[in-house]
Image (cartoon, rainbow, N blue to C red; front, top):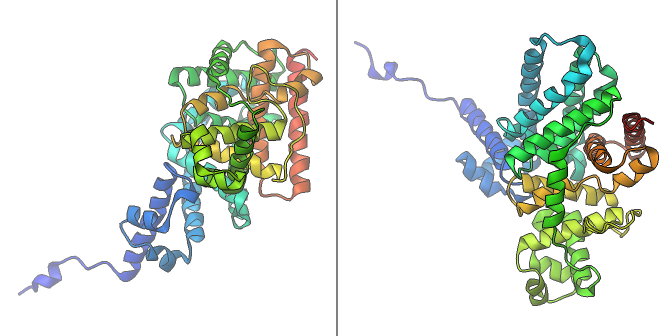
Length: 413
C-alpha cells in the first residue's frame, strides 16, 4: 500500500525559498525603477513589492546598496542578451558593406526607439545605474561594466558596417539621444525628430551636408513659444531659484520641497508657496537656474544672452548629474510633461556658439548640428563619470574635437 505522503511534491528547500525571495526583491527594484528613482525607494516599499518584509533585504543582501547592485547586474545580463539579439538581426540583413554610413541612421533610430519602448524597463535600469555611479563611488566598477558592454556592442556593429572609426561617436550619441527619447512629448513628432537626428548623425559620419530637419525646427518653435520663465531680475525669485538649484544638485529631485527651499533661501514657507504653488513649479525653476549657472545663458530661449563659465559654490559636475536625474524623472512621468518639450527641443543652445565659431554651419543646419553634438557630449560625459578627473577630461575633450571636425566637414569646412 502506498503512503499518500509519498505522492505529495517535496516542499521547497530553505535554500530554494531564499533564492526565490532574493529574485523577487531584485525584480521589485527593477519594477520600482520604472516609476521612481533610487532615492524615492524605501526598504518598506521594496519589500511590499516583493511580497516580503523589509528585513529580508538585509538578511539576503546585507544592505540596500548590495540589492541595487544585484538588480543592476540582473539588468546588465538582460542587456547582454538584448545586444546579442540585435546583432543577430542586423547580421541577417544583406547590407552593402560600402554603405555603412547610409545604414547607420535607420539602425540607430530603430535601436533607440525599441529600447525606449518595448524594452523601456531595461533602459531605465541602465540610466539609474549611471546616477548611482555618479553619486556613489561604490558603483563605479558596475558602471564601467555597463560602459564596456555598450562600447563593445557599437564597435562590433560599426565594424560590421565598415565604419569602425565612428564607433566611439555612435556609442556616445546612442547614450545621449536615448536619454532624450525616453522623455515622451508627442509620439509622431518625437519619432520624426529621432529620424532627423540619426540622418544627421549619418551625415556627420560620411561628411555629407546635414539634411533638412523640419520636424525638429517646428517643435523647437513650439518649445520657445511655450516657455514661461520667472523674472530672475526680481531679487526674491533669484533667491528662491538659487536655493532650488542647490537642493537639486545636492540631493536630487526628492530634496526640492517648499519647506526645504524656504529654509535654504532664508524665507518663510508662506513666501515660497505664494510665489510657486506647485512642486513642479519649483522643479522647473531649479532647472532654469541650473542651466543659467552652468552656461551663463538665460533660460528664456528667445533672449539667450552670451555663454559664460559655470558659477557658484556647488561643483558643476553635481549640477550636470542633477539635470540627468531631472530628465529621468520626466521620463518616468514624475514631473510636468511640458519639461519634456523644453528638454528635448531646446538643447544645444550653449554649444551653438562654439560650433558657429568652428564651422560654417548656420540656421537650421547649425541647430541640428548643435543637437547632435549635445547628445554625443552627454553620452561622452556619462561614460566617464566613474573615471578620475584627468582621464575623463582627456576623453571628453577628444570627443569634442572629433565632433567639431566632423561638423566642419558637414558645413564644407
